[in-house]
Image 1: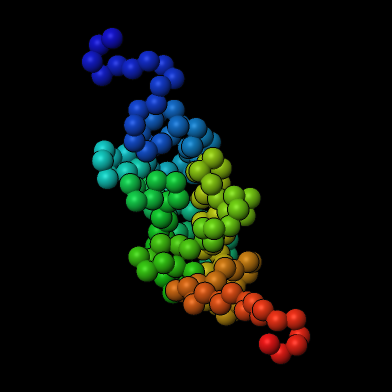
Image 2: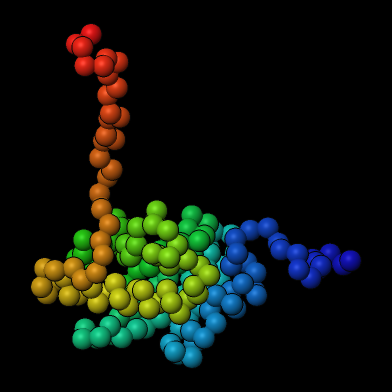
Length: 164
């Protein structure tokens, strides 16, 4: 077998986005809905990213940048232009759209695809804009901030009511 070729069905090492078929399946149908979609693919830590302009109902056009890199292979970081004041953003400015420890049916997973991920981001931006105008967050919220101290386990008393 010539150098650089590989058998069909065999996966190269590295992140999923290094495989053309996986990227194609992930992006399926997105460009038809969002013709402004721009995709870039870099080697190594360069990762895989998308830029897209979206309409946030009632609030106008926003630009998203969706980034998968070696540090975030399965769950991307999503950045948006415009106002950044939000109680649901990470320190790097990326959107905090779901609680990572939620079961897959309560959050986005890669198999849902890029089109659904963009839909989640649009919903999140709508909620942020609504919150900035009204002070009320629409939809579910997960706890934020550093974890508090773990609760102590219940104390086990070794007596049966006789005071010993």
